[in-house]
Length: 207
Image 1 (cartoon, rainbow, N blue to C red):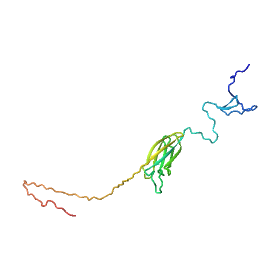
Image 2: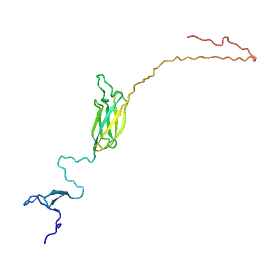
Image 3: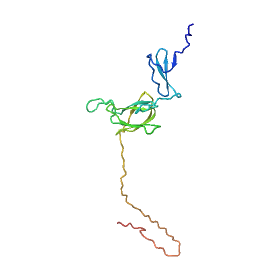
Image 4: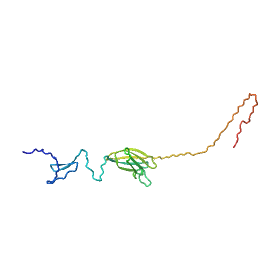
């Protein structure tokens, strides 16, 4: 009588090895060895779903959040023009760029643009960020952008400049305090008394 073809499962649990005559070592705590009839072996975690084996000493756990990058390109009115050395200006150099996570305020990074007007921020935690860009002689810029895991975002910013500057100040001055006093005399003539009339009615005195 021939045994049933599928009487034994292709996979069985046990402490087996691929070499006959040897006993395999016990599996680590919380795991099971699964050995096939063909000699292949694999591990399966135990003690509840989602359990992880202890990390080796000194190894940090993986960050559950993804990280991404952002490349800033800053330009101004002089970009693409010729400088004093006859070279084409590729972008605004030494512009200060500060990025900050909108939820986690502790995540802040500040960089300056290079000769190409670029600044590359790497390994930023995913989420929404705000940025502020400043440069001497230019108006500042504020904006927002998203960081997505494994993606490099690009931000092109044009900083404007005030070509005409108007300055004003208040200068204190002394104004002469002068008054003109006008006298008006009205006489009653139909009265039983003598009336004295002054001619002229007023005299201007010079200082």
